[in-house]
Length: 253
Image (cartoon, rainbow, N blue to C red; front, side, top):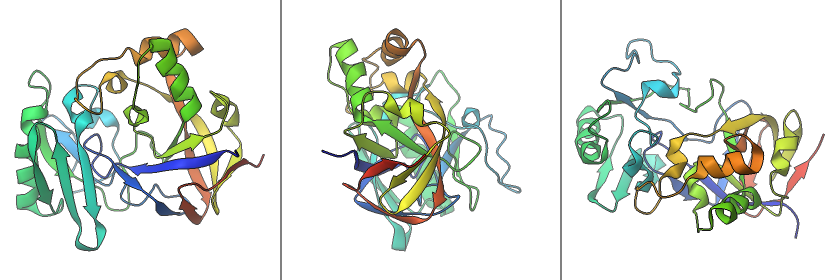
């Protein structure tokens, strides 16, 4: 079989849930629509409501510090700007993230699964027109399933690829071949991406997407395999186009 995009994912609230898509329009210079549209500023965050802008991940609550967040899933209703969040330890919650009262409800909802020994969640925030990706540019992250399988084999356990919180999950690509794509363009569906850099990983990937418990030394496995705690690559959209799950992946140059 040819290399293809097996799955498409987005994470509307940074580090707080994921949802699967079957189709997306990738737009030049933009992240996936509604990916990392919101983020959860912690109690010492310097995020400025008066002058909102992209901020590094250190300003926000993250799975690396609160592993239970890894088990959140959600569903977006974009026309009505509603998110429904689910977690195995909590009742479902439906909110309009830009509504002040709903945002407060969300902070109360997420508080019990936020690590009490770390900075606590304070505000649900966003910067219009900016995605709070881990890169200062609007990136799309690619995860190679065969690379993921090598990590799982190294650990001798089953792992969900959603631990890596990627946007595009690729199939039928040689393990870690994506690392050689840096500086090159690829075509996915009708869109084109430029591969920018490898993704350095943190403790977030050690947490189970099912339970939110740390149960796998993913960083140790990556260091054993590669000599570096890296998995996947960041890309930017350089040509607008539709993408559907199952569309081919082609390295152009």
